[in-house]
Length: 194
Image 1: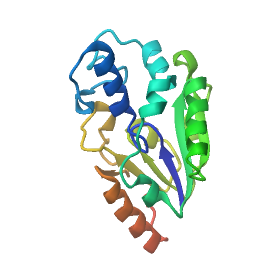
Image 2 (image 1 turned 90 degrees about the horizontal axis):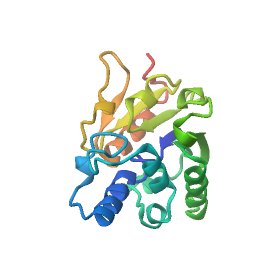
Image 3 (image 1 turned 180 degrees about the vertical axis):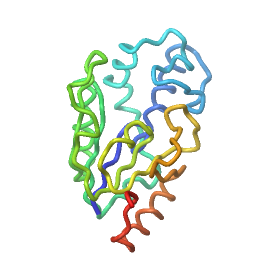
């Protein structure tokens, strides 16, 4: 089965790592569940997009980021493409991380250097017949993936609100993703685009 999976906060626990960094740097006592915005101002009010970009590209992030429990095992045996956005250095380090992890995944990246996209969005990747897993509804809505799975991880962020009528499966755990993948594998004629 072909699967497109988002990196940050879907495959990797990126926000957990960013919050841990901000706690240590600024003497805070916050948790990833306190994140309510992309720029992490809900954690540290002086955050800027440049600061976020620097954290995601920095040594602390890459020395401490962990993966969601069971994600690698659940994806094993599937044809996986990790798709993600980030600045040049962040994308270089993601590629290095994935390569050093010997996961065998393909990569499809979108450069957002300085807050500007390189002209691509996830909807431009050909996901026909594939499963897409992401933590953002806007990254799922306009792709041509046959099955779209929103990974909420127990959150109810504004960027996770599914519009009425959208063919998106909502899950909170990788175990739920495993069950959906098993079901779609056992029912190959089914498509969420029915």
